[in-house]
Length: 114
Length: 115
Image 1 (cartoon, rainbow over the protein chains, first blue to last red):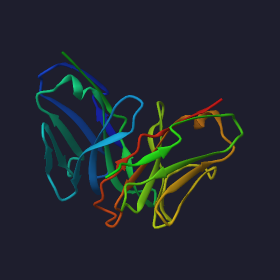
Image 2: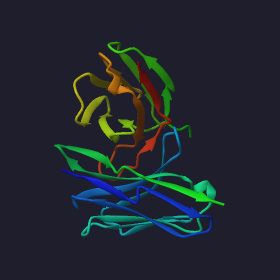
Image 3: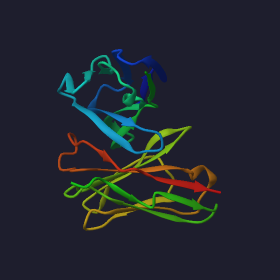
């Protein structure tokens, strides 16, 4: 059964810092891994999607890596800004419980202060 | 291109009642998935519909059901509401053509409160 864990649960950093959010998954047989951002009370915004055959994806100041063999993914945010404050969720798509589904971690709540 | 829309955005129901939530996917998307988000359990997958057929499901009781129409719009129904059903219900759409590769796009959610 696939389980996804995110560390740390919360993070507070000053503006301008580079930071790394961690995501680990127990079953390495994933199809892909997706990173999302969620603002309070809102839906999810897709940030990056990494297919199982890929090692990393980049979008602007964001870079996500995937290491299937170790069951880990990291989201790197460069030069953080107050507008980056949100909860970041990772989700692994895998075959679990007889079905193809997206399994989410609990998220990392990020606060970037000026 | 318009994003995923969900109606209503907020809903208050009484225990024992039933509720229907609606989701309109991004134009051209044929797959619609539903998720429940609560502070205690986080985001949990409910089910996925593709071309009017349920093709994936999570571990929720039969009180939770859904359907998809020929225009890909989807509805989710919860019968005999319980206090624990209070949550943010999120809908996500994707092209769905390639079951492995597709990226999911989420709507703003429907906040359901059961009193």
